[in-house]
Image (cartoon, rainbow, N blue to C red; front, side):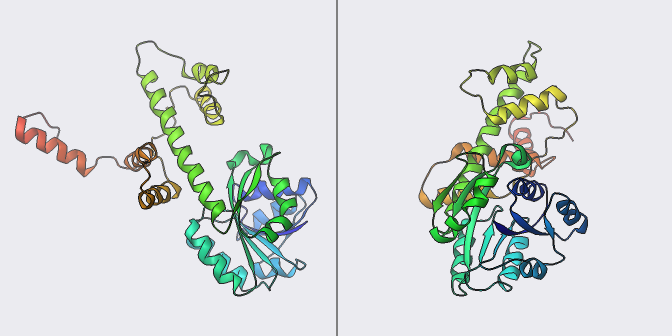
Length: 297
C-alpha cells in the first residue's frame, strides 16, 4: 500500500522502517533532511516538503502524521489538509486529546477528507515487536488502511475502537494505567532499596518475571535498567508527563469516576520536577510555629 509519512523522530523512523518490511511505498518528510536521507536508506521515498509528499502520492491519498502533540500536530494537520482533496485521509498517530480529534474530523468532513486517530503504543521497541494500535474513525477509511495497521502491529495488535476520537481516548486511558503501574513498581523497589537485607533488585525484578502475578513488560524493562545500574545512580528522579494522565483525570472528574491511583502517580511526577516546594516550606514553618520543631534554614 502507499502512504505519506510526516515525522521521523524516535518512533516515526522505526515505523517507516517496519513498513518497508512489507514493501509498502512510503513517502517520508521531516524538517531534518538527514532523517529523510536515513529513511531513504531503508527504501522509503524522500520528500522535501509537505507539498512534495502529497504530490508523490496517488489518489486516494493517505498521510500519517507522527509529530509532537499539541501545536506541532495541529499545524501539520491543517497544512496537510490544505493540500489534499476529497476522498483522501489524514491519520494522526500521536498523543492527541480526543476532543481535538472530534473537532478536526468534523472540519475535514466538510472538505470531503477522512480523519483517522491512531493511538500508538510501543515506544522505541516497536520496530522489533510491533505497535499496539487503537484506531478511531469511520469504517471505510479504517478498512482501507488495514494493510498499514497489520504491518505496524504484531498479530492481533490493532483494533478499530469506534468513531472519531475513540482511538486516542483508549490510548489516554492506556497511558493512565501505565502511569499507575510504573508508580507501583517505583514505590515497591524504593522500599526494597532501603531495607536492611541488601537486596539484589535486578535479580528480584527478573525473578518476578517468572510466574509472578506482577510480571509485565514494564517489569522486564525495570530488570534491564537495574542490571545496568543497580542503584540507578546515573539518573535523576525527574519525571516528565506527556499530558494523557492530566486528560484522564479531567475526564474522570467530568464522569464522577474515582481514579486515586492515577491521580497520585500524576502528582508524584509533578513533585519530581521541584527541588524545594513552597508547600513543604509552609509545613516546616507551621510545625516550627506551633510546636517549636526544628527547621533548616
